[in-house]
Image (cartoon, rainbow over all chains, first blue to last red; front, top):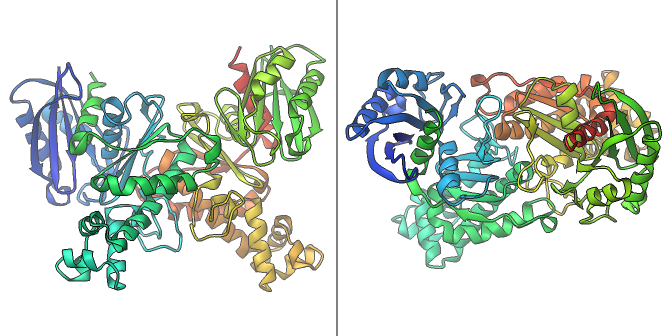
Length: 313
Length: 313
């Protein structure tokens, strides 16, 4: 029977229906806005499930949420959902919909989808890292998600890579996502622009260095602007440092880069690969680790949690 | 039947025979010096096996080696064994001894032993980190070692925690083991001593700040010397940063600290626990992670690889 996957993002909730026959084929897609702070999220999800199953019964529902989700489907805490703390999302949504519900971290959903039918297909030791506003990850080992003691494994965004680095909203300093995310790119870009570099990107942003965002840097880099390329190389170095740290710890056979930054994959991946080789332990004595872009796009998270939900039935 | 476990250290090779009935009971122990650079290691191991099985047949042999060991038992590279590169240790020792041989990373052996019959007994998601000259680790998930694509998982010593930090013999800068190992303690101690602090530890070292080692700092700290306690707290902060990074990635249910630094566990663990709590993501929304000292001592590595070897038969 069909399954539903729902990815709760910072601004939108994306729901898909997957066919029972070709499990990464999306039959239907719907989107609704994310309720501010997560207020009333279960009601929003229940309504979305009703819309998605109007055209045919579903066996199970998967939901991906940014944040720490335990193995019972309780959202402990999530950065964009301050109204939801220690909320048993899986139980509440199952009670409202009458079908089994699996709730997991959104990046775990991305990883499952890319492993089952995307860039990591066929590689049972895979690391899938999503570079968006922050950084999420899913670690596949033995063909399955590494979950850890509580279900919280794969949260490298707050790995400390520079204890004297810039402060992070989490209260610490120098977390990886301060440097290597979309937010990190914005910070690198503003620093460069306010320092008098990055003129082309500033022009593209309308002339105000404070308004320079990642997309302006990327656009300038595509015109071979050396300042913009320099900022992207600095970003690539930080991405590579964290990926190498992860690779030293979990030894993946492939690394898949997803998330918004992947739109600049053509510019980022070559320097990421170079810096990764320079940052990984004993790189000359181990097989090369391919670093490739994700292929399933913004539906990946929803597809992955639908696949996880299918395992419930 | 009995199994043999052999731990190849920087200076000594420690071999044990385990009973088939009580698999963490050591029946016999022998030690021989590690051959310089690893030259002729297989012959040394074969002779040790012969000594150990003189009193009774053994079913299999496990060997733990510091370095990257692949799943076929090939030592790719090891810091103390420069004469051994890409050497098929398992095949060569099996050919010489006529019994099945498992070769693995030494820290994986520690982890298996502490999980099977030590400080992590009964906890199937466990992180065992050995703080010696460098740092090794074994990650237990689902009750089994996390091995990764090549068998190289669990190598956090070269996780970069400060890209502008001190140079590491590996060629990079700011690797975790520059700060958080026995070597790191020595560096912190010499920096403090040469900076005119740490008078008591300098006295204990015979008066020369260049000769201050970790044991002098520990001894001074046991006399409540504030400078020595300060150095140990700095060490504890670096240990905690790396442990929190690892915990964000693999979500262990327990962390076991082994290796030489554990002799100062009474001094180190309280500040490690405090800094760990300050460094782990969302610590208020997850169960506390116990951080405990290893209990099996210097035999742990040999016991663990013997247990891994027992799975061969």
